[in-house]
Every structure is written in C-alpha cells, then in structure tokens.
Amino acid sequence: MPTASDKAPAKRSEARERLLAAATQLFYAEGINGVGVDRIVAASNVTLATFYRHFPSKQDLVVAYLQSVHDSLVARAADSDAAEGRERIGKIGAEVMGEIGYEGFRGCAFLNAASEFEDPESPVREVIADHRRWFHDRVRRAFADAGHERPGHAARHFVMLRDGAVTAGYLDSPTTAQRTFKRGVDGLVRSIDLDPLLEERAPEEP
Amino acid sequence: MPTASDKAPAKRSEARERLLAAATQLFYAEGINGVGVDRIVAASNVTLATFYRHFPSKQDLVVAYLQSVHDSLVARAADSDAAEGRERIGKIGAEVMGEIGYEGFRGCAFLNAASEFEDPESPVREVIADHRRWFHDRVRRAFADAGHERPGHAARHFVMLRDGAVTAGYLDSPTTAQRTFKRGVDGLVRSIDLDPLLEERAPEEP
DNA sequence: CGGTAAAGAGAACCATCGTTCTCTCTTGTG
DNA sequence: CACAAGAGAGAACGATGGTTCTCTTTACCG
Image (tube, rainbow over all chains, first blue to last red; front, side, top):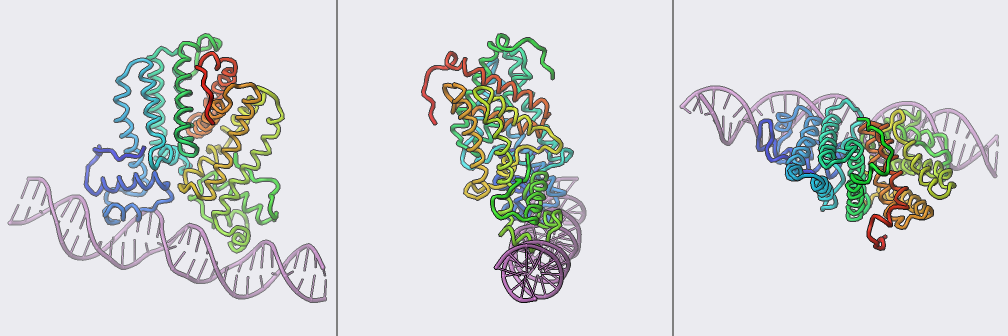
C-alpha cells in the first residue's frame, strides 16, 4: 500500500523525494512514533539540516507521507472508475484485495496512523478523514450507478468490510481475508436485486 | 473497551493495580509508543522503582494491559454465551455495538496495539492473536449452534464486520457505524436460511 | 560570470526515553 | 519483637527524541 507519489505537487527535489520514500517505507513498516527523524535522514543519505529545510516538523512529513499514499491510490483508482455498473464495484473490490497480503503488508497506512494520533483536529487526522471520505464517496457513486436503491447503506457496508479485510489480512491469514472479503462484496452486489425484497422500505439517511 | 481486570490472576497489589489502571487508560487514549513509563508512574502515584519491581520491562506492562482488556471482555461475554441459537449471535453483536461510541472511544485496543508492534513473534502480538482467536471461535460456535451450514465463513464475515465497525466507530460516525454493523449482522443471521439457496454447494475450508 | 539557493557536514540544544541504583520508611507475619 | 518484603523518594545512567545552529560546498539561473 505505501508508495511515494511519483510527482510531488509542490516543489520537487531529489532530497525531498528520497526523504519521502524513506519515510513511507519506515513509517509504514514500524509505525510513526516508532521511527525517529534520524533514522529517516540516515536512510535518505541526507542531513538533518536538509530535512528541516523541506519539512518544518516531523508532523509535516507524516502528512506528506499519507498524502503520497493517497495520491498513489487515487492514481490506481482511475482504471477502476472507468468501468461501468457492477463491474466497477468488482474492480474496486479487486483493488482492495490487491492491497492485501503482499510481502511486508502491515494493514492500512491510514488506519495505522490514526491509532497513533488521538487528536481528531490534528492535520494528520484530517488527511485520514479526507482519504476515507474520498474512498466512501467513490464506492457510493459506484453503487448508485449500478442501480442500488440505498447506495449510502451499501457503500458504508462495503467500507466496513474493506476496513475489516485489511485488518484481517494483516493479523490473520491474507488469503482467507481476501476470500471472505470477496464473498462479502459479492453478496453486496447481489443485494442490488435482493435488497428491495428483504428489507422494509425506508428512505436511507445520509 | 479498556477496563482493568478486577482480579489479577497473579499476585495482586495496590500499586500494581494502580499501575495497570493508569496504563490501561493512557495506552488506550494515546497509543503505546506515545506514553512513557514516567507518565504512567506519575499517574499511579507510584515510584519508578516500584514499577520495575512489578513489571520487568515496559513490554510486560503492555502485555498485562492487553490481558486485562481481554479478561474484562471475557467476563462480559459470559452473559451472551448463555443465550441459545440466533439470539446468541444477536447478543454478541450487541456487545460489539456497546463498545462503540462511548465517551473517549478510540477503536479496538488490540488493533491499535497491533499497528505499533510490527514483529509478529512479539509477546504483544501473541496476546492479540490469542484474543482474536478467542473471539472468532466464540462467534463460530454461535453460528454453528444456530444451524449455519458454514459457520467458519459466517464467523470470519462477522469478525470482518466487527473490525470494520470499531474502526468506523472511531474514525467516522459512531451511530452510523452501529447501524451499518447491525444491518450486516442481521443479514448474516438471515443467511442461515438463505445461504444454501444463494451459493453453490462447496465444503468450507477451515 | 557572479549570485543565490539548495545540500552536505557536524555539533549542539534540551527533553524524554527505558532502565538501574541507593537509601529510607512502612507493614505484616513469624 | 524482629525481620523480610513491599513501597516511597530521588538521583542517575546512556540513548534517543525532535529541533536548531554554523559553516562549507555544490550547482543552477540570469
């Protein structure tokens, strides 16, 4: 899941990119509080002064790290979003399954970061919230376009499964998590037809 | 979710219990790497020497912290496990919903801890794995007793929903997370009847 | 060609990290 | 009553946390 963005939107720079790449790898692998700036600086072949020339504080690096992960997920999403109807939902599900279980998989970078930042007002938590909104809205749009009568319900259900799936992929068996997630998504897609029959009619709240 | 166990299985002690209580509150609220032993010692009105007389190292305190959370969840589980059939599944679901959204809720203590300990062999990760196995087995037994044809599938699905639900309860809206989780569990219970009709027959792998 | 900005090198800051130590005082049990 | 164990108080350890500093060298841009 962690991938440094290929093109930084702000000023690009050799040193900055190396710092971001090292931070991405280390933060994801060992947690944010568990990795000091010295480690990142050393891994980047950069000096402490150079680091602080590019990032006012460690927290700014954390934000940039999560932003870069987000950017790479947005890039990967373009392909899936081109699909139509239920196929799009399937492709988004495949994205999630693709994240799980590769060498060094440690769960969702955003969820892991969130557990280390307790202040909901913190800039770090805001990037996380933005990313989650982005993902939820994308899934909701997919269900709406596929004709689901309660796209909000379905999207929240989908996101809940995906959060559980990346967790299980980290802590339990990756392949089992993928299978369970797939079954859940398939059921959710089937519910596009079944839902009106199974639940009593009620307008969904946003 | 974090609650110090009422009766420590090992040697009980005023100081030890205060340390564990303070650790439980601080570790859960701010993360484990984010809280130093000095903070815990100060909050417990205990000296550093006393702390190290009871816990060989900080890691042992972390393990004791998670153990105590596990113990209190086990205690709470006894009531639900007394129920029969589908009602038991509903009660376990209610337990999960009860965890979510109270003042200071910060998600699952075990999931948060797991994100800070990357070594799967670490004693901390082992308590986490034990707890997850305990919960999964309990759910699986509930589905089996309720007559589900693939209790393993259903249990993994249930656990995935619960992991996603506590996450959403922390990062998104608690009440929405509860509703979404409830809908998911209800669907899972309904699938005890529907499943044989919807999916092709195949023996579930453990 | 000259100037400005970025990067390297390295020391230093103080606070906090987890851990160990000594020394005194209380307390309960034999 | 005596003696051992538990707890309080407080200093200290070296290592590392994030951050700032000075000084020199490189390299691009007008």
